[in-house]
Amino acid sequence: MKLLSVAIPCYNSENYMRKCVDSLLVGGEDVEIVIVDDGSVKDRTAEIADEYQRRYPTIVKAVHQENGGHGAAVNTGIQNATGLYFKVVDSDDWVKKEAYLQVLDTLREMAGGAPSLDMLVCNFVYEKEGEKRKKVMHYRHILPEGRMVSWEDCHRFMKGHYILMHSVIFRTKLLKECGLQLPEHTFYVDNLYVFEPLPFVKNMYYLDVNLYRYYIGREDQSVNEEVMISRIDQQLKVNKIMIDYLVDRKPEIMKNKRLYQYMFNYLEIITTVSSVLLIRSDTEEGLEKKKELWKYLKSKDRKLFLRMRNGLLGYAMNLPGRGGRKISVGGYKICQKIFKFN
Image (cartoon, rainbow, N blue to C red; front, side, top):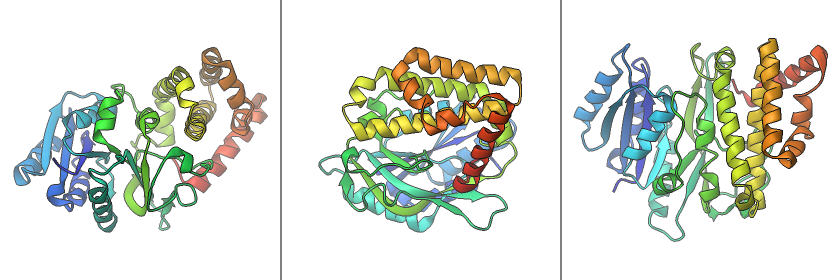
């Protein structure tokens, strides 16, 4: 069995996928690289995936499928993974060699131990086009370092500090057993990927290294703000799935207060992003969709709604009138500068 399976969802990625794959090949035979060609037809993505499989038959597996979107590609990666642990690396991102080797050393030490390691967390770096100073998202002062911990051992997560897809490596069997199935033809499903498995995570380990390099800068990138507004219905779909998940599992999740607090905070920030994008759309339709989103939350769980609506972010996102909406957007822009998102 391989130590780590890495899925690379690819869709018309010929211009940058080699940098991603080459950064992962450094792991050698301990790593299985699953390149998922998600119905690429406009370029040589499929050829490049097959080329890597021919050159590294014991390391690289090329999987071709009809286009189903990022979620479908991640699902396929999980299905084809044979490694003990699993990570997703998007085709325009890459990993840093020194940190990558440290991660593999840590996983080797943890493999087969008792209790099982469910989730390894590392830092990631925003590789934002045009910015010389790179923003590092770390988890110091939140997750204890250098030992296996549970949710009870974690300190309080601050606003803007969340465990994103770039940060995590899950135990593969956990992902398969928790029933994770990301929706097809939907962007922003990475939020579900780092949300739905969490109630099944009992033991985690924080390794304070800057592993993942998250590239931001392409105009067509899904996290580009204009692109996000144009795809707002997909953001709302993911947001509502997250609401449903937390509400449906609330009695179970609330048994662990630190876990519930974290999942509430994460849902709160996703709902805030949805709300401010709808405000930024500057249309009557957008404002109606924002009302409908909060109404949906209220219909699913009134207590959850009141807690979120009366919080600082909920209050800021629902200020009345055009002046109130300007204040909401102003606060959002400040957060953009601080946390370097979008």
